[in-house]
Amino acid sequence: QVQLVESGGGLVQAGGSLRLSCAASGVIFSSVSQMDWYRQAPGKQRDFVARLARNLGTYYANSVKGRFTVSTDDAKNTLYLQMNSLQPEDTAVYLCKMDLKGTTYWGQGTQVTVSS
Image (cartoon, rainbow, N blue to C red; front, side, top):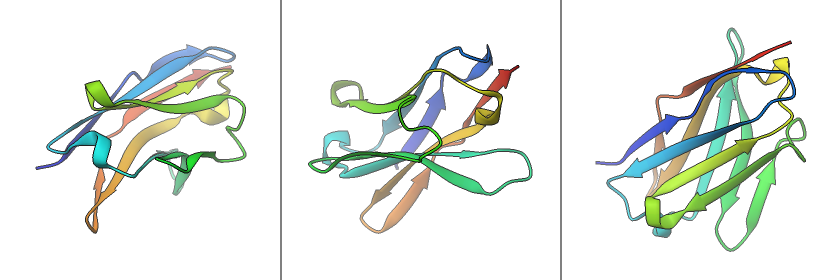
């Protein structure tokens, strides 16, 4: 059974940094070709944030480009999102997503709150 568990969220002042983690179990992590980060603010739709596609590279939403970096540690079965220069508009629940053999898996999310 595939499970994704996010961690690393919290309260930070504007201009600060956080690193989110998404730990995967029940899957050979290095075999997953694409993993995404999304975020959802209260009352808003879930928005794409970043993608790591093996052999293709990384992709970012325009709103986070240059500030956020997505990476993996296959030995730890973990996906990361390094977030720098955080702004109040980055406040949201951040979720990781994995598509595997036609099934989409989501984590439960981790809350990021940026104060002004």
